[in-house]
Length: 607
Ligand code: AGP
Image (tube, rainbow, N blue to C red):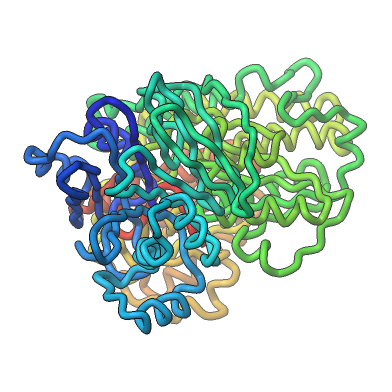
């Protein structure tokens, strides 16, 4: 999953390409590269550096009106300069950038090597440049089609040709591409954010389509060769770039924003008097809601954890069977999609390919799937067609924080709607509605007084292993806390339902091991206390996230982090906050790259 930008027009290509890359860096940041098409040759500069660093080395770049650029997240081949994109053909007359995975790489590469082609990288992508070159007999479009038709797998590709500076050719299959139509210039990118500074008139490429781009716009054909007549659209969303302000990292800024972002997700959606809620994007009234017999929340990583919380709340409040599923598993296990089930695709970016694949699988089987998405107009939002925008605003840090609490909030709003048609009386619905509306204040209350996070971070920073435990609604929170600590601080840790600990992971504990226990005052508190004692009996140090005023847990714990008391089903919105801060502080202490942790990317657009 990488970011692609390409430009053709009368202006200097370089600033447009670099501006685009900067906005696409969330898609991967292992290496950066650029190719400018000049009369003297294809000028390439690429390195295992971030976009800004490469930009500083480009003072000697020639002026060019045509170019392609790339920011990489490595799949095939290590993070090396040779594996960075763009890749050239043998004679250095064709350059390509690629996002995706070529699944028949081995066969194609063996064939090219047998033909005498010499490879300069270990990537699957380089194959594309050589395949085009082999088919090239003076017509770039014809050669491009011959090459692309041989590929299996996913791709977003842009190619430029030394002999044809009047054209850039692009293709899409599974990796998004959008074409910006300017005034006498055309820009291609993986995402509209890289285009909006220059134009808001766009054409989205669909899978198995090829675009032949010139200064006058783009001609689109299917891979089979049929001409496609696609009207352009006007981008209306706000694509403004988030500012870090005075905060040292986006992650901290985004953690601190959560009272406001949860408030935004609730605004206009809760009807206290009716004890109900409304999510306009679902287009569902009570008759449609009562027909729902099960709910399945699909997602990956943090979004999966939010889906788990949502599913538990649906079962607890609406008494409708609900579960969360990891999208990458769901899509390939020939899932049962019943007509009375409602599926939610939970995704911050709206671009996660595993979640998108799961959406497509539900649709193929005739199921109803709706998005719970942050990025407006993203692929998952457009593919679902209906759903809920969580409105947390741009989330820049790779580690998801505010999107999690907004996703949970959106699913809780839906829970209220569903529950009100079945299990909840007017008074009970009003109580749930009021509790939801109170959540932003409780979040602000905790963030104003976060407790001894620094001490907790010191305890985990030196540890060989950290165990996160929780029961019921606190188990997905424990999972999320462990994911954050791995992502940001690279500290080995795992999360377990607290009752499951004695079935294995307890063997990992030794005197002094930090165990982060999420134990608010809820229906499982007594059981959690018993598990806490089991941990302490092995000499482990309990860092307890517990409700304010719970002196029993506070006095048992090695370190006590009190949080405001809420309803059971609402507690994840609060108990997750100290875990986000813990990961953040541990990452800072270990001098990690907080907003762009190693090996990760903000949108995971490969399988
Ligand atoms: C969260 O901190 C991670 N970066 C990751 O697990 C993420 O939640 C996952 O890749 C899903 O992304 P999405 O919400 O954009 O679909």
